[in-house]
Image (cartoon, rainbow, N blue to C red; front, side, top):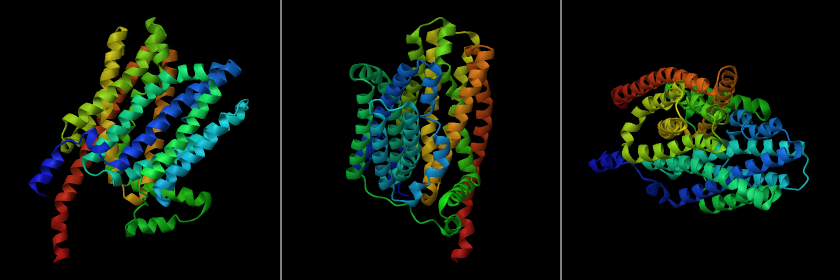
Length: 436
């Protein structure tokens, strides 16, 4: 490696560096459209279900249906991104989701049919996200890849806030069916953008060892899919690096409890609806700030060392709830927690680039499934604890538990990194006799 290469490696890539790549700009534009449309659709569906049923429980269940399909689709459908050309997977799933959401927009659609269409659409999100994650390292290299991940994460957080903020007025202005039609249109535009702007990319052929695993899981049908999931899980489970990264990613299960308890926490404080919005916006805002700071101010070679400490730091501010702070202190604490959550960006980038390309989509799907399961359990347990004690106590207990678990995971990540360094240093020496 030349001196110029080393300086380039140590210089953090900027958002501009990532967006300078035309194919990535197209990918980013498609993502922005889809997220905005999805958030508007969630608001529209919530309004539709509540208007028809006047049931808060059914309205919450409908919202939950937008997340639950990941538990099945993550392991079973993400592997499609490794078996078929990845741009085609994204385009086909976008078109299929446009059809499904378009059907949901038909006035008078029965609620059971809406639920089925909603679940089907969310099932298709898994292969799309896996294909996007797998193709990204082929569009961006080096620290541009980390910067690209930061752009995607930041866009997701900002678009979520904008989608929710604009979704309500849009639904009130044009109605539920036209709002759903807007969502369907965003999928169509996204499909066109991806088809015209992205190069096609097929998963690279695996090495010999992985090739044997592929041949062993080549059976058609459900048994074949299960075999592929098992083979992918074996790849992830046998690598300390990947196991540690998934464990660190799942620390977000302790942080996400603040979203599930925002409304009851605001009620405990005696605050109004505006306070709920502030509490919900605190963590996404912190993540945006944290991502900007981490990717702009920290050298690429140092970021992996910060993954563990930042994972611990993401839980520490939640413990302040035990002291019964006022709303503004709470918001600041949750913003700081979100800033520390920026560790997810280098953790995600390290995970994806550490997996063989032939297994990348499947591994990503398994990681997303682990993330969704732990987040769901975290919110559920926090809700049960809040019911028995108080929201502030539940958040504080979750933060303390998160600190303990994060310390364990950070220690495992430090050992995995040290083992990888030792392996790299031993590699040339071990290979010398063979080369001789």
